[in-house]
Structures are given as structure tokens and as C-alpha cells.
Image 1 (tube, rainbow, N blue to C red):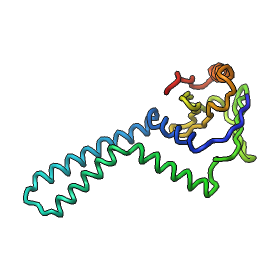
Image 2 (cartoon, rainbow, N blue to C red; image 1 turned 90 degrees about the horizontal axis):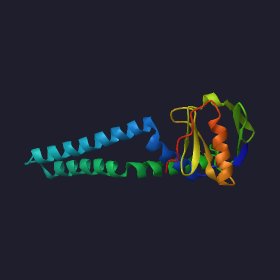
Image 3 (tube, rainbow, N blue to C red; image 1 turned 60 degrees about the vertical axis):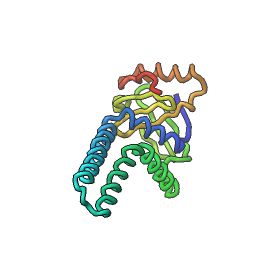
Image 4 (cartoon, rainbow, N blue to C red; image 1 turned 60 degrees about the horizontal axis):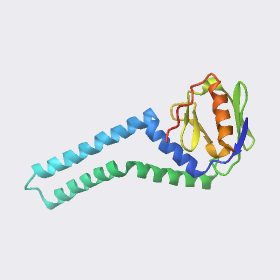
Length: 181
């Protein structure tokens, strides 16, 4: 089976969103943010209330600390996506990305081949740790945070996608999970 496609910014953003939900290392980082921000909120409030005769400057400082911690807590994911979009834009300008490059992914009996602009990588199926199937793509994880993206739009029909799933399930790798939306 051979697929030819181009990855768009949205594919990378969907991968990032997917990773923040299901990748353990990213979940740990989010948990850390969710622990540190309330801690700053509590400490800022505590010091503001404890120091009743504090100057206006101290109250302004405590207010700023609390506001920043609250903003990070509430908008961390949106801020991360905004940073990712900016990074993708810079990479596109520097032409250091596969954006707008034609990618080819061929699934053979014992390995799969990914090629872009003359560069070709052949990987055995045993190197794949896990395969996830989301609402928009297949993610072939070869590391804890590194995955190859195969968008669902490459399939002409549901039967072709189901045939691909059956093909992948027959390989000695992590089995595709149920559809996650």
C-alpha cells in the first residue's frame, strides 16, 4: 500500500492536541503546571492577606503573581497551540519542515518506507511502539514523543481504511487502538 500526501499545519496541531491528551510525558508536564500554578495562587493570596499593612506596591506585586498564575492555569493549552503555530510558521519560512512537501509512505510486507524530497527512510514494523487512530489521522509512535503522521484524508474510502487497519493489525507491532475522538 502506498500513500502520497502533504502534511498541513493543522495535521501537526491535531497531533499536538492528541499528544497532550494521551502522551504520558506531556501529561506529566501538564500535571506539573496544574500543581505549580495553584501553589502560586495560594501563596500570593496568603502573603497578600497576611501582610495587612503592606504597601500598595506589594499588593500590586501579589496581584500580578496571582493573575499570571491564573492565566497560565486557564490558558496553558491555548497558549501552547499558539506557540506551536508560530514555530511552524518560522520553520516554513526557513524551509526546515516537510510542510508543502510531497510525502510518500509505502507499507510493505516486512517494513514501511517514508520518503520526502529524495530522502528515504525504511523502518521495520518492530520499531513502532504503538499506533493510535484519532478522528483525523493514524499516529505511528517510534518514540515516546516522535510519531509519523498518516492523515485519514489519504484514504479514498472507508473500505480502503478498513483494509489498511487489517493490514497493520497483522504486523508484529502495537495494535491500533479504538477510534479516539
